[in-house]
Image (cartoon, rainbow, N blue to C red; front, side, top):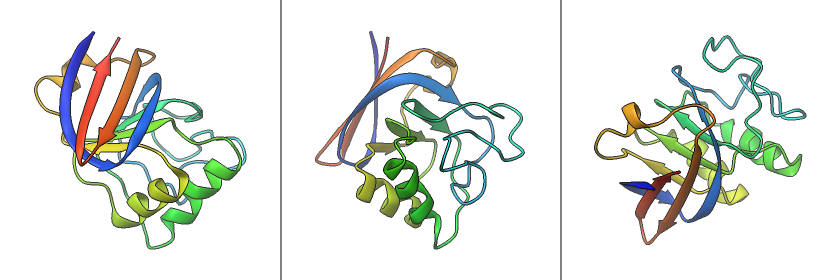
Length: 136
């Protein structure tokens, strides 16, 4: 199992298959909260479900209300198991991840981007602002 260190944002543990988006995601409009499907114009993940995945994104696009949509994904049982972002997520996304208990990391070290593939098993663990991403 390959391990990468990352900056921990939201504490917890989550695991699932990787869903790798080449485009930034907005939880306000790109994902249907009732199905968990990507409905936005995101070619790399269009129609994929975020439910139970480790969502790998370059960055988030958000607004002040994005936290509600991420939290609603959780309430409908359609939320990602964890989020890995190349850069620090939008504050509203972090707020939603905290409320939904979705472990979130950013800035994974090393050759993470080259090592990750869609469907690959990923484990994310965050404790005391230290994030670890394990690829199976």
